Amino acid sequence: MKYAFFPGCVSRGGCPELYPAALKVCDLLGIELEELRSASCTGAGVLQEKNRKLGDTLNARTFAMAERLGLPIMTICSTCQGVMGQAKKRLDEDEKYRSEINQILAEEGLEYQGKVVVKHLLWILVEEVGVEKMKALVKVPLQGMKLAPFYGCYLLRPTDALGFDETPERQTSLETVIEALGGDPVDFRGKTKCCGFPILTINERNSLTMVANHTLEAKGNGAEAMVTPCPLCHLNLDGFQGKAASQRGKEINLPILHLPQLVGLAFGVSPKELGMQRHLVSTDVVITRLSARAKG
Amino acid sequence: MHVTLQVKRFNPEAPEPKPYQQEYFLEVEEHFTVLDTLIKVREEVDETLALRCSCRASICGSCAMRINGHAALACKTKLSGVMDPHGHVKVEPVGNMPVIKDLVADMKPFWDKVRAVEPWLQPQGPEPEHEYIAPNEAMIHLTGVMACIMCGACVSDCTVLEVDSNFLGPAALAKAYRFVADPRDDASPTRLRALEQYGGVWDCTRCYECVQVCPKGVDPMGRIMALRDKAVHVGLDQTIGARHTEVFTESVRHSGTLDELRLAIKTPGIFNIPAQLSQLRWVGLRAMLKGKMPPIFHKSIPGLRHVRRIFEKVEGQP
Image 1: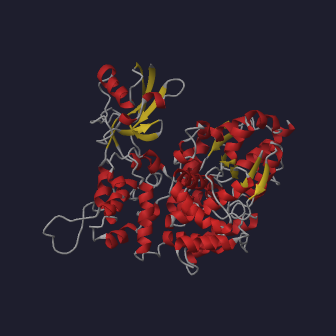
Image 2: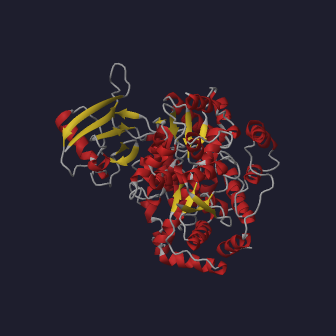
Image 3: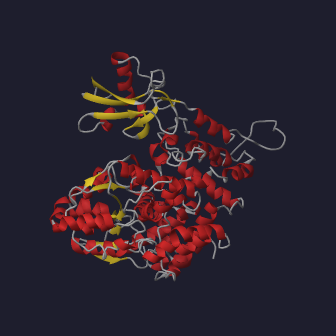
């Protein structure tokens, strides 16, 4: 299993713990990665507000690089995945549009042929690695640990750019991984909603209300921690949880784990190597419970 | 086939009115829609069940409700497509609007917001002697948004309205776009100035819920993004939202990737001291201590010149 790795900006920026955690987990899973170092940001839907064609051209450039390597792309961010999926859909469905964009790419000697596959690590875990292999690699089962899945909008909507028709299991992939690792997925209405991050600087009160709503609902339903495949959600749900709690006037303290951190913990990787100490909401509760289990 | 319909009900005339769930087991035809099923319940099982419906053909927009947690038109949703393996389907009234009874919601907040965007043509100058003529090309892109049937599905599932009832919401903003983008309307600058205020276009989170649930492909979020772009083009570029988009885009042009520190500092403005200090106090310092910080010196990607060339070509500016 080999992928062209698109780490995205945040896994090396605001969530520097995600990048090494993802590399470690892929190593244990036998997923070989070739990083697309010259690839640009996807635009995250923000750049697309100004100029969609510009975003599509930048993403077509990334797709062409992966095609040249003959590899599918692996993402570790719901937003990167969603934005790339939408760009790919527009480019694949409209040959004229693609050839217009390819003319711009030609000066760099690149061409996007419309064949690239773009997959989030979460989907790779479920579709390529498979539940059985994940189970076999578990050294510290999460047995009994109640975990709230939080997908991130762009890994859920719009469904026609996410391949849900062909692979409906993607819609419950996070629960599948939690179960495969021995955890108990907690259902809550907020799991498919917005974390509030995109409006953090624009309307902080609303953004923090979303953080408080989702974390408190998950906690109320018994969650001991939340897990997300989106580092942007992590920035808000972890980074701004303290401020959200203060706005709500209520303690929250719900650890928010990146998907590769959860997988890594279950595979027996040390919390330090997974960067758990870098979170703003302490992850000690999770670590203590798991180390007790490992000893027991 | 057998179905178990789990309906969220509410009777305002009960001694202690509160929502409750009621299950209906019934035998239905394979081709039934959710609406067919609800009508069968009302006609043959429980005549007290209240619901709104009329055309049964996705035209009138009366039967929007939440089916398995997401807003949809009951008449457009095939029952067999939404039944779980046990034959269960969950039906609730739309969200973000008060419930009158069972599946009937009070649409007043919806209509108030549509009215607030002044959804009528506002041309200037003397009335022409004949009809206003608009070329086909200038109107054709508006047909998508004109397809809105005002069912309220987008408003029901809007994640911002859920936390802030002041937000104009996807339906009203899509309607606003319909007039801002109409070549015969002369009020666009005034409209855009109103729409860039709190509760307007910049408050949308871009969560795609409205795009996903709209039964007519109106793409409300896409219209909101188009309104943002139009606002910036008429010079309304100093809102935090507009600055965020600008600084983000500039960062990608500058280094190929997002420089989060630059974004955090430049979006509110370097001289917006209270905002800067508040973020530093709450998150910045703690993040720095924990090592959860983007690098201070942001590195450019190899081959950056190709990214800049793409910007130049596509944006047509150096």
